[in-house]
Image 1 (cartoon, rainbow, N blue to C red):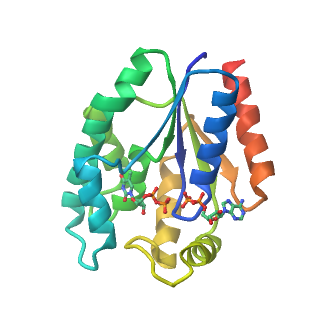
Image 2 (cartoon, rainbow, N blue to C red):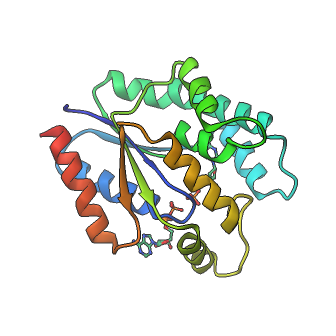
Length: 200
Ligand code: ADP
Ligand code: TYD
């Protein structure tokens, strides 16, 4: 595999953005064409979603799913599919697995949300690095990062513990579950070794 489509997933504060940046830089430094993407995006729907994440009264979960999917349709059309078609490696911070893990409540299961995203025709990634840490460790990091105790909608310990088990319930053969509790470099080594194995 020369130019894989790679996704990073994890609960808030897991360290996935740190690892995503490190892999992006590692690939770029080899002189390989690589694009770093993230969802929610900075487009129209992503901007609305970011405002939603800061509000204290979120819309019903069905509406949240619709908004994340609209953002993903835009992302696919504008970014993901053009990259895949031009042979560019994609390294992505969150994708539809987050939709399943964060919105898989209130009568809708994570598996049903995965099915819905697959029916939309979104491309499947070659590899998903799931950075796995307990919600308690994630909350410590989030509070340290924000400094103020101000957290976003989904940044609550009990909620993140359920999100973590939702992620684990949808992990398939595309997933590599990486223990995110070690130091940044030793976590990255596992990801880099796997990337080299896939591309080698
Ligand atoms: P996420 O994107 O999953 O929310 P980040 O990569 O932004 O996570 O990391 C959350 C916070 O934890 C940041 O302040 C980051 O510097 C720190 N961090 C990231 N990885 C580790 C690690 N392995 N050990 C300790 N702290 C970490
Ligand atoms: P992100 O900016 O990646 O947050 P962090 O770096 O703190 O992990 O994501 C913002 C939030 O969006 C995060 O709480 C997870 C949520 N989210 C969903 O609920 N559903 C989705 O489909 C996606 C892509 C993200």
